[in-house]
Image 1 (spheres, rainbow, N blue to C red):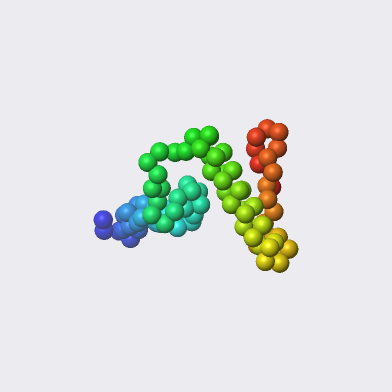
Image 2 (image 1 turned 60 degrees about the vertical axis):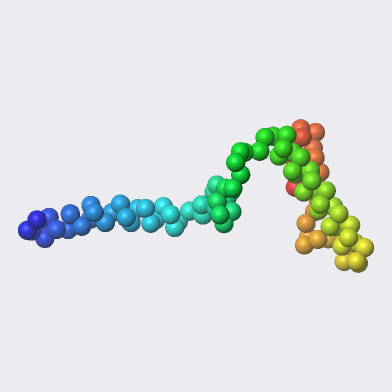
Length: 95
């Protein structure tokens, strides 16, 4: 490792993996991509389709209650301009 070319190649090949790791970690939003929180994924098992439907239904029920309370207080029934979703025929959700 005496010539400048050899030194440059040595440092490029030794620093390149560090730069690539940094780029991968900082460019992508890992929390958004994998749906984790600040402490990671704390669940011991993933939710089933049945559990997911139940959770979504309870979230919509909670939103409806919040909208009803907001309507009683007089701001027109809107909670942060969120419209309630309705289930369509296929069991999915419409926005």
